Length: 216
Image (cartoon, rainbow, N blue to C red):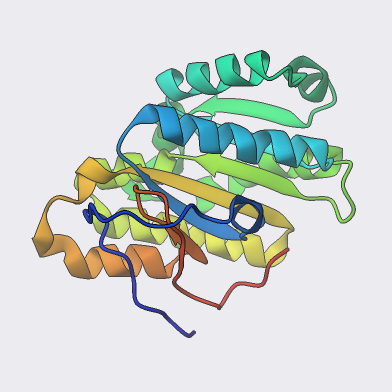
């Protein structure tokens, strides 16, 4: 694995607008955000592009973010209901998923694999893209981090990476920048970034952090 200089998540420096076309094709992107508006705009771009390309879409978000995504998709005229009827668009509550994927506060491989079989694999089967692909955007893992369980969050990110090695998918994780104010966690922050192919600091610019993933 080759690793470039990782971004400072708290940096307030201005930077160039990211290449969203490249980002939306990243096998596993990590996005930091300070406000919901820019976050939701980028997620809707990611989702609508995936649906247009025939991918299935899996959204694992908190109710507030799910509502924001749904409203923006409606405004843009994206036909979510049609995609949902075809089994290509599924949304789930991130809090409920977290409870299902953990045992005593720790990620469970057994529970994760069962969840993937029950929910993810039908999405892959319903995809119209060739090869069949699923675009996933979620904040389940960020809930672990926010709960002070950084090591558990990194472990669950690794579960998703292992899934990406077996199936064709594009993953987008998003974390609130406020969760990274503790400088004592710098090493864990670097480990988190290293689990991703691309990192977007909250000001918006893109830094490649690892080349161990191959773009699907």
